[in-house]
Image (cartoon, rainbow, N blue to C red; front, top):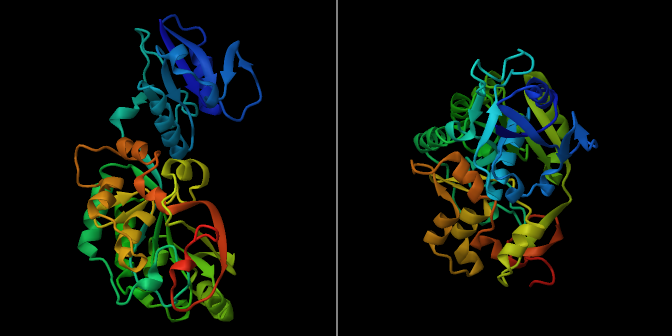
Length: 378
């Protein structure tokens, strides 16, 4: 008899349990749900994932029945790290369409082995302009160190997107940023390409908003046609013209989100070379921020951008170390699951971050190394 663990007790999870309760060839032996307070359902034990021990259930197959694809991907990576490999996803509309789970021979059907599909990537960032029209002290992307404009080639970006789409079925949130992205006049083409390769993505243009009152018509058209949104950071210069910005957005019917006023920046670096594993586990601020750069995907923007700024900081960083922390998207032997698994672990660049976070007053001016370093680690 095949043993099954059902992960997630929403509508689909409960449907699966109900459909298999009288099966002769399959038995649900355990349920996992991190939020439900019940200890049992239909006499089946319920535990949280943190309580799951591989050695006790190594002979089981797991059905991950979570509606949120990003959460399902994260759970799958976590389960694989524990040793489980027989992990399946139910068909999207299994419970609402009342699909069967067993064929006439008692075999499970309408389940997809995770190995046969590409996972969803929760979030990724891409810089369409390295330079910025503000010179904020302590900029985490080091845009205030850029001395001349740099905009990636649109053809190179399309290659990156094509390779990314070969590994991930969707990117839930795709952020185009800088620097200041509105400094790149080809921004509409970048938006179009993201929508082309990831039709279901939430496209966000991260901007300080200063250039929005003079936005070009082709950008307005791209924002509305491809359902992209502006995410506006309210720096003091932004606040001074916020009425003009909002008036423009209302007139053009562009979606937007207005961040709270920024009065402080977070400082998070320590060039004393901290315990990188401890930093990642206890204080990483950027685990979520996957970053595309020059054909590679990185666990955070810190990896490539600090490498490119190493001369300013007086650091000795080898380009090979940078690449080893990321993944070459053109590598056909690496899957999306491999990438997600790799980025659940600390990397050598974590040594440049501090175990604690600091704050500095927001202001512009000549950059100093001390702008990025946590007080006490200097």
